Image (cartoon, rainbow, N blue to C red):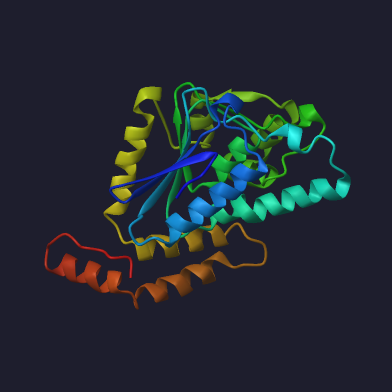
Length: 260
């Protein structure tokens, strides 16, 4: 896959996407959002990919926000359309991938960058990372899911404060709030995340995909998460991974999962 704004690599079952606009601090523009969608769609469909990692080029930024120059003169209708298209094309899309997707947050994750990280299934941060949703300082609100996912992850009160003050928090503060799972030195970020990915890859891809659906169901309006869990639990019994996993357990050997 050849892209202008991102780099894509496949290494031992891990699909690594690097947002590559370092002169813009990896800011998201329409072209980058489209490229991320295309890359994620391709990796999620590949039987060779068991985990996806998303990160930013360089040590300064994961994604420092959206490219403001693209929408500074938008009308009300154009602004709403921008948010709707972005959520459908990338942010909701990431959240609902069947392949575990981890954000390796290196440096600044602001605005759309933090929203992208929050859309991933979980987050690992470098010790120099700074996170925030500064949109109200520009006279707008987060439009790529930030007002919804941040309260889910850290609670309503903390999210209200972060959004209203437009302030940034450190990696350690993000860890204490539950926004990131781990904080590691900058130079160890990718290796740590890849090691974590390897632990995930030992387990059933089919079961993990169904677990993602069940977990996400709890946060969707009008959907009973318990019923989704029951349904997906039952579906597991019809997979080759279930037969392999139970047989391997009874035979006291390591399972060889295929994701089918």
